[in-house]
Image 1 (cartoon, rainbow over the protein chains, first blue to last red):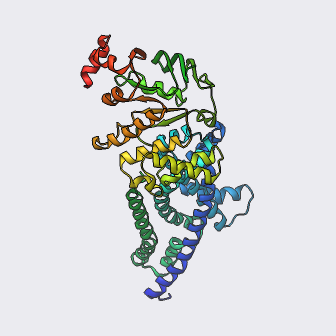
Image 2: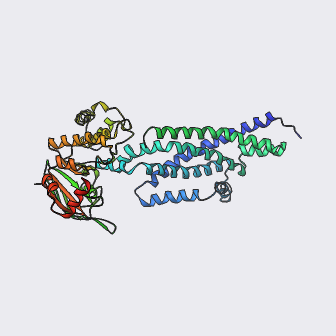
Length: 218
Length: 242
């Protein structure tokens, strides 16, 4: 049996954490793009488009992320597509993230007081003009803290990609443990790395929230 | 010909009939104060005049424009009518100047230089020219409401609707807003105000309209109306607010 020093373990975990970060970034960027599109559909004046977006959101919020990963990985394989763990994890996490961001952002648009709609309407602005000049800029400011806060969920969500064989932080921890048999040390270190990634984001979200409430916009 | 002419106006919310047939003519330059208990339909009536609420039956004519309760573009509707709200509703992410200039630029496509000149003019009129670059959150409630009045004036309306514009203000800030409205009235602006300020209604308006249960119950010039109310309902109302 190979002897592992603490440094070996830490070094390997940190190397694997790179992929946790990359996967999180992919999921977040993809999810934000798709989520933006979904939010626009959800706020559209056409009922079928609204319905489409809301069914999508309900579907992805109402099923476990783990199932979505299984479906993206094994389901795609069953349909004859040869998808790598990378692709499956990226797709599943992107879809998952977009559904939650859509819901967060729709809430932010609806949180802009109705008086703002009325004021722009009596000044002669139509729906698009009100949306663009009055509602969206305010919704955008409201959305920053919860969006940053949600990014923490995305990072932790990437841990599930380990079950389809994607080697990120959690999977690396499992593999190291299989060789070194030091579960407490290893998983404590894994948790510590996640915490080091997530905690600053949580703090930042809290800071943004405080700044927003202090600005008098609400 | 009256500037505003309302005939047999009806409006219901579900089963609740809020307006049960309103007839009212307002001449250009007239200042009409609408008073009445909450729930009497006065705010709904005001909101029908610019179609924030679409009425079910009856006609509204403002200048040469007929409103029949069907959908109209906001741009069309804002041609003749401006409105000031109880809660100011300034755009918090825009400066005072931007609040005033936004609608003329994007709705009327007026050029920037002219719009800015007009904006400075109307802000000067409400005594807040020096706040041109301030944000609404940096202003007191009274100042915010004066900016809201300036913002409405920048669209050059023929009628200005005021929906309880002093109700959200601290008592010591009410005066500055009323003085602005008083000056507008003197300049000949047509004002239709829903108000709880009985003294203001008495001093500034040409006519007071008392609404009760969705109808105009009594109206007349302020002196006689307040001193010598004809109906028991108005007598009771005056006794309860004075």
